[in-house]
Length: 232
Image 1 (cartoon, rainbow, N blue to C red):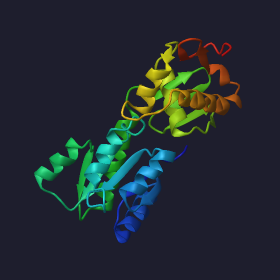
Image 2: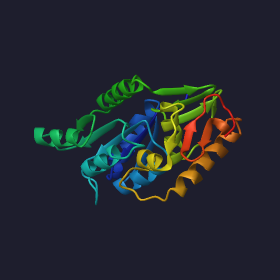
Image 3: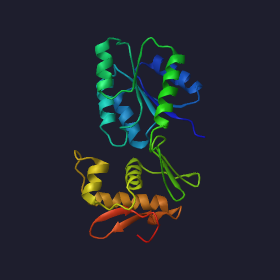
Image 4: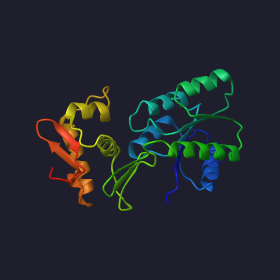
């Protein structure tokens, strides 16, 4: 079984190394980055199972980073822990208002922090709708993975979001405009033809498993999930 992946966003090198060591010893895969911008770049390629964020980051602080993560369709459900020396109630409330799930003050006990991580991962893993199934394909919304008969299907973040949307609404036809709103977001301007490009990429990724006809073209409308695997 693949271990959970924890992303640590911490600008102080000594604390970053301590967190990488202590969290890694608990059996988690750990990625460490020094700032919010690096974290956002990391999230474009892979969504971790949990993110640990330091409040006092350079340029973009942890509160703003948490808000950015919560406003993104792809990362909005990832559990967040805020790590900070600021222990006042008003600071905790500000963190929770930004969408943080838990709050750990410095100096911290590595054992307590790992216990918080385990508890949060356990709660998120039990969330309803974690696994979406169709035929021999399984999409895990928490691990952000797609498998066919146990083999991993490598999808880019946008293709993952497209597939998740289709799996949540089997047989429903979506127009290109609806897909743009639901997958890219209304605040992002993307040409409708971009949808066709990403659907093509999704089909290519599924072709190896003979599932390229899973996403069906609805002429004059857009696309829908075709759980019977008919012709696209």
